[in-house]
Image 1 (tube, rainbow, N blue to C red):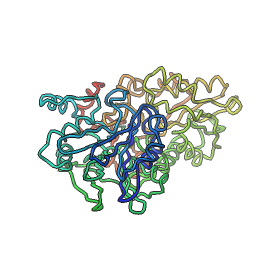
Image 2 (cartoon, rainbow, N blue to C red):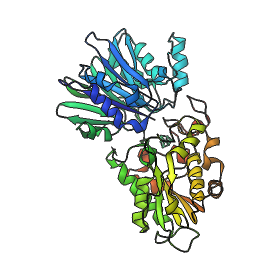
Image 3 (cartoon, rainbow, N blue to C red):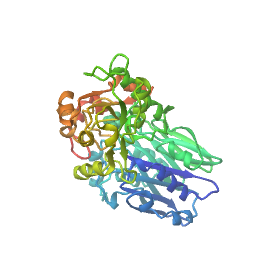
Image 4 (spheres, rainbow, N blue to C red):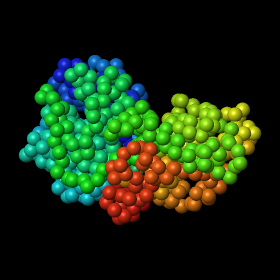
Length: 470
Ligand code: SF4
């Protein structure tokens, strides 16, 4: 998962706004950050570094960078390792001019593209799939950069939400299937492109619309010019996991509030939990309170508490200065991170029956450690409720879910998961209920990590084009 941001103005300097936009997208990637712009000599420049936005980039220097268009990126590696060579935007000054690309998503035909390009002499500087797009552009030196970009995007398959900087202007592009969100915002005469609408409020911009699947939008002194990729998609594949976990709750994706979707997921989960929604399975009385795993389980837990009438309690406290465990690169760091990050309240849990709501259960690592910490608090009962369906399949479209062998629900029954985690009971939301809660038709959403239904069919269950994971 990554975040991209771009800004175009006729008059204002925008590099610092891109920095601020990236800060609002920090939840989408914490490994590296970068900002690119074209200087007065027509050369692309980039500032990038490892770590959080404020560690990787110098805000003061960007605030003094006198450019009216710029793009940026925050990265969490899904294709290619966590190293500075893979930090984005990826930039080049090629035969037709400067180009910088910031990419969210994973290409599924990368190995074919890469061998075809290497056979034509391309030398890759990174292991990131985004570099393949750059080479595809550079291998069409007879075309204007925008036409070369359109030609390149016709050849790639899988998930891409891009912001691209050319001498022609700032370009936003979204794959024909619409896997990852990408939105257009505006403030006065300035235009902004962002992975999520939450970044617009920080800079005083308002959401105009989503970039449509298959749309390539050029923003320059002539205003907005929209192009269409020839590739056709017979249905949409917007990532349902954006609504479950990935996106910020104050974002709106394809007209749907992420907050309301999560709240409704929690409500539906409570309705499932027993007739009137206020009794947990296997228990004759109501639980004493509904707790949540901060922060991503919070909104669903609010919906659960509202629907069930069971009091809501912030019984698990989060250390705000530690990042998300899901996007830490190794199991050891993830496990240590959970103890550092989350702390159950002994006073609240001791002798009480609690419902613990989380948004998803992937490996089961976080849930298992938190349940064992809550057991140490002498909780009487602990019932785990997951506001999404069981994750049984890997994602090949830009999310770092592990291979099938490491997915708890792919290798164990739900009863076995509950037992191994140490919960008294465990239940999930069904796929249909999740889709209803999002409020978009099922044929506009990707649910592959829940049901194994991939864009390219069952073959894609066998091996990931970029990492070989199955
Ligand atoms: S497989 Fe899952 S995480 Fe990946 S794009 Fe589809 S819904 Fe999203």
